[in-house]
Length: 335
Image 1 (cartoon, helix red, strand yellow):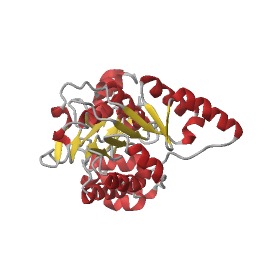
Image 2: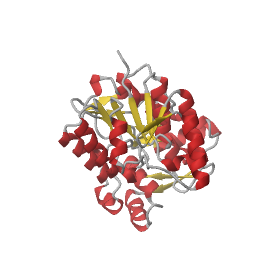
Image 3: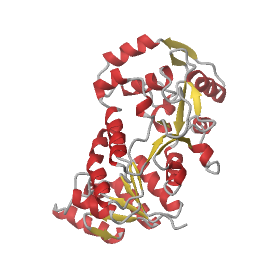
């Protein structure tokens, strides 16, 4: 079967870059819509260079330009202080030109930019040629979250729900990816807010420590995502990722770490009520890690429900051939 042509929006982001890499790895003609500002950022420019060398087509405004020419052109524009066009989710002409070239659109913008997808959805509906749209909802399923009271303060989940409902109302063919936590977010600290490395003396357990959360490496999320684009089993469904070895409670996580460092940690316990007060008493964005911990490890928002048809499908059951990094393997890199 001919591989779908895929457009990645947000390809210089952490997840977006992995999505573009996976798209190329699985032999899809791959396009990336690029903001002009990305080329003045050394790290992002290097990502784009790498993707172009691997075969991706970089789209800017109304032109398809190979990376070497585009890079040299933009260097000159930077030196003389001039840019032409934006290549963003606020530029309808750019979006329409890019979308018209492909079969599938994957958006990987940040959560705070979720509502900017409204224009993209309008363009997709007007063109009528896109056979699959994967919105930037990656994370836990916002329709299953038990943190509406807290979310009213920060408006994190509501925009994602709004975009999903808009897709359904407009009849846009889509797939939602629910991958829960990215490993780089909380796992390096063992879900200890404010730390950037696992504790080696004391650890805080929230609630009873038995409620399970799910962690996924971004490159693995990307591989599962790309496998859905031509799969009729995932059309208009939520693909949930809960691979064996990636579903873990705080108690299990700490025990796993203790075995790896051959040392018992002193446990401090924080009740649900105490954590809730800390969240409410801490300003944004300093309380976001605590909000995620409350959602996953107190309320069980990752795992309290079964994955059931017709709306949900299990990614590891659909794609047993895909290899992925387990929590234990990730912790091995931190010892």
